[in-house]
Image (cartoon, rainbow, N blue to C red; front, side, top):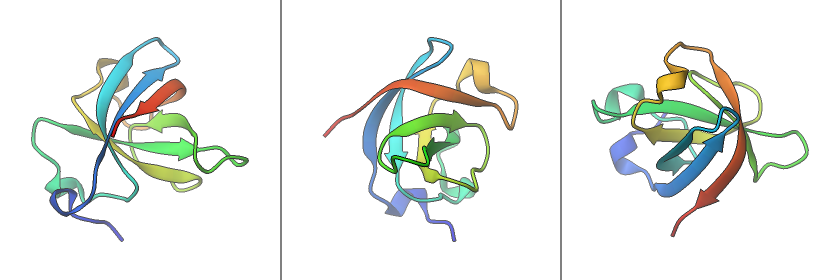
Length: 96
């Protein structure tokens, strides 16, 4: 099941990827219908580890089936243009 981006709660989030790229965007704890995301934004999915369901460990361009933590909406990430790319998250922060 997917949800409408415009009808879901969002939390501002900042992440740093293994390649040093820092990105700010919106975190949603749900799978989002792609057709509801703003045209100038891109969607990625966040994976949690087997041991910790709260801390994000990687960001993927495309769908995650195992250890899905949430969806991350942001401006397109230059180093993640190809579908299927997954990079480790080395730092993150949620904002109120």
